[in-house]
Every structure is written in structure tokens, then in C-alpha cells.
Length: 196
Length: 191
Image 1: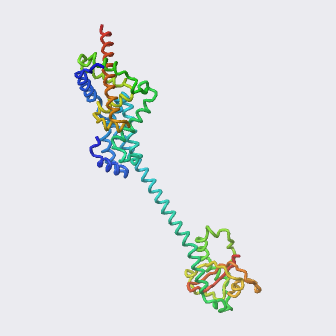
Image 2 (image 1 turned 30 degrees about the vertical axis):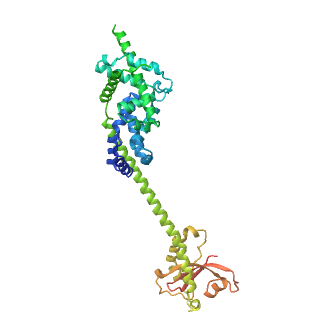
Image 3 (image 1 turned 45 degrees about the vertical axis):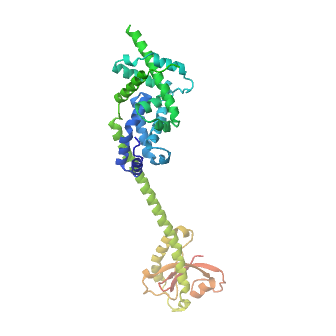
């Protein structure tokens, strides 16, 4: 994403001068990842569209808000998107903060290894089940899953964006995946009950 | 702690990849078009504001130059008058061209009013110009200009201004109609 930071900066310079082509070029480069990130965070296409648009509006109005020495343009845009998405989703039950240490390692391991539901679900069921499970994750875990698993961002980039260490990202991702598997096992059990 | 099934991990990774692939990949094209329109409007407005600012700046600079030049011109006129031969006031004492001077004084008076209006509006200038002995009807009115000076009353009397003969050395303000060579043709007292 941030393969050509100098190209980004040049485009940003042109954008500040009023070059529409430069603006659209930056939009084409980053709108997809931003849109998907907000979509995975909110589960709502309207929110994803609104936030994506707002991110680029902010870039248009304050192109000098980005400082190259503080990180990549991608990180800067993701940061804006993250804050906007948080604000939009405020009040939602999905946004309850979590304590990283609260999660019990024993139960995590037990849940993750005891039940392998993934092999037993059809593709469509699996995707739907997983989508809901991701949305049900607490926000810090959802963020790392959206960035590292769904957007395939490196731990270092995700850490820079989330303002934490790569170790924290790895740890959260590990727990998030365990929670995902446990949530999906519960889902599978309820489906089986319904079927009977 | 029990080990996590590695097969299960691989399946979850695969499932997450599929979820990513099956999710909408980009924002609708309408957003791009809308943003492009907003970008154009935003920069059109910015350009307008910038041009307005530049115009205001140029206007301000022009006003500053005008303000700076006006007193400078007046001052140079005073200097020119000071250099003019004082004998001109005593020449041709028999001439009495009052009505003609009134005609001549019209144009310089307008010029003067335009230049000095902001600073001198309070000064009463309704008094007519009185011809001085050096008055010459053949001098083109375009060559005349009005110069405001402060001189001792006695000096004004010597030039022919209507001040009392026993005037002392107190300084008085007067407008003079002068030619290009500095000759004073008419006068009026301001104070």
C-alpha cells in the first residue's frame, strides 16, 4: 500500500495545488483498503461509504495535515478512518472496551482446540458465520483481524497505525483468532439444535 | 495449557481470506464522482478567495502609495514656492484681473480638492482666490497648481496677500496658485 511514499508525497503536493487528477489518483490507491477496513469494523456499507468519503474530504481540505516524518500516508489515512469509524459506531455494544489481560488463556486454548467447526460448515455458512463472529469481536481484536488477516497488513504497519507494539498486535491477533473459533463453535451448536 | 490445533488455525486463515475476497472490494463509483465534484468546488472557492486577497492587497498597496505621494507632492510644491523669486509679487501692480483669476482658479481647486480631500476636508476653502500683481492671463490654466504654505504674515503681506499691513510674524496658512516656474498668481487665506 505504501510502496511509493515519495510518489504519495508528490501526489499530495499536486493535490494541495488543486490538481484533481492527483486527488483521484490517491483516492483510487487508498479507497479500497479504507472502505474494506471500515466495512469489516462496522459491518455496515453505509458507514463504510460515509467514512471513506469523509477521509478524502479531510485530505482535500487539509493536505498539509499529513507529516511524512510521522509515518506513511496509508497509516495517516487509516488513522483518520479508524477515528471516524469509532465515532460513527459510538454507543454500539460492539465498541465496549476490553482488558487485554482479562481473557483467560486456559479457556482460550480449550475452546480453540476442542472444537473444529470450520471443517464442518459449507462455504456460504462459513463466510456468514465468520463475518458475524468478526463483527462480534471487541474493537481492539476486530481491528487487528481487519488489518492483519483481512487486509494482510504487516504487524509493524498495523502496530504503527494502532500506536502499539508489534508484539501487542501479535498477541491481540492470537486471542482474536481463538475467540473467533470459540464463537463459531457456539454458533454451530445452535445451528445443530435448530436443525433438530 | 493445551496446544491449539494447527489444522484449525490454517482453516481459520483460509476462511478469513475467503471472507476478505467475498466482501465488497471498493467504495461505489458514485463516491469518486461526488468527491471529484467537491474537489473542484473546494478549489474554485479557494482560488476565488486567493484572488480576492491579492486584489485587496494590491488595492491596499495602491492606497498606501497614493497616501505617501500626496503629502510628498504638496511638500515639493512648497519647496518650489520657497525657491520662487520673491520680487514677482511687486511686479505690475496696476493689473487687476479679478474675474479672470476666478476662472483660472477653478481647475486647480478641483485638483487640490481631489488630492487633499481626506486630510483637509475640515478646512474651509470657500474663500475666493485673489489675484496677485504677477497675474498673467496668458498662462495656460493646465500649468497652474495650488500649493498650500505656511508663512509669516509679514511675508504674505509683502507678496500681496490680503493681510493687515501691521501683521506681525505669526505664521499663517495660505493657498497659492503658482505657475510651473514658481510664480505666484493668486492667493487665498486659509487661516
